[in-house]
Length: 230
Image 1 (tube, rainbow, N blue to C red):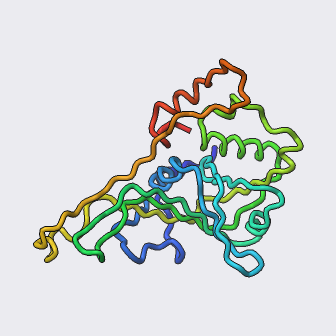
Image 2 (tube, one colour):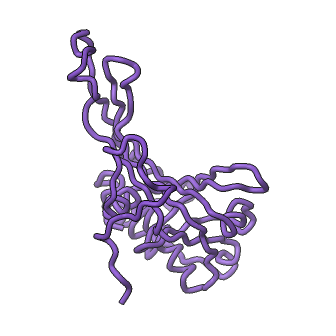
Image 3 (tube, helix red, strand yellow):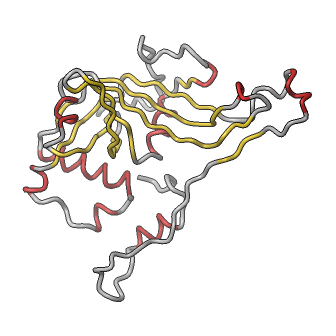
């Protein structure tokens, strides 16, 4: 059986060691899993022909592997399979408004992963990875929609990135100047929370009249984004 590393600490490396704002750093692998579980878009940073490029793309996580989606024609995905990349996932939870501009900030959760991804060529793993991606976006959708055809699989590029080298930072709470000299200014300070929510589902105009939404979408819409088990 594969080793369960969910409760093992993240390994600090020269690239992931917390140097600034160490109190916001997290070393538990569970914290990494929590940040990745509620996201749908990551940013893939890499060099392409000597120039830096940051590409937003969808992702999914299965165990200790992150799957990244793209087209076979994507220069960034082709280049990523040959060099070290940096992938980030960030959630902004609130604006931290302090008494001084210097102390303003964000409440946030952020994960950064380094590694050399490998192209997924095995058909079985490619299907697994695409299922993981689909379920990351909308749990239950893989079993509802049509599966990819051979032609569609051939046109799809998938990268697998091990979650071996990662860094996590989280900030929560009020501004940091409540016990400093600026507390005497009499200015309002605090946090403006930011929360995601679903809008009304918009049906495709091409749908036949009376086509009902599937049950898994009803469950998604009745829960906050990111709260459905994937």
